[in-house]
Length: 126
Image 1 (cartoon, one colour):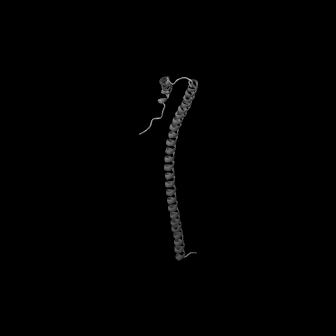
Image 2 (tube, one colour):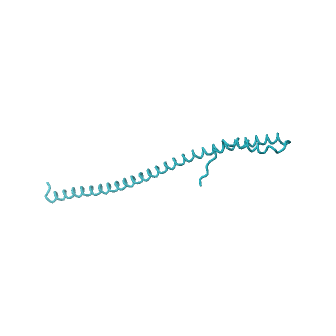
Image 3 (cartoon, helix red, strand yellow):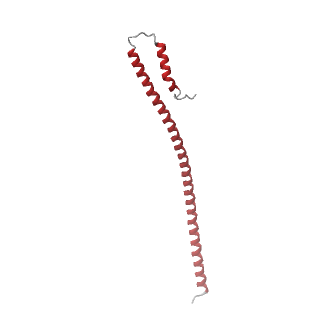
């Protein structure tokens, strides 16, 4: 049979065990809560940085498309200029033995050939 002292000692042991378990679990939960808050903050920062990076990629893609368009125009102009040079060289070869009296006509012909492409030149920003 148990005495009152043994019952009190048993009750105190159970109470201390419950308090110890409560303290340890509260510390564990506090550590987990801090860890979870830190992880959540890290994920939020990463998400923000990814959004900025995505916006940067969109800007790069749009600028790349603009540059491709300008490069296409420049390639077309270069090809047309080479064609004009070849035509003028051929005309010069044919007229090599003739006089230079037709220079004004040649300049007018050259102006009429190059006129459509002058509008395609890239505009200079000031």
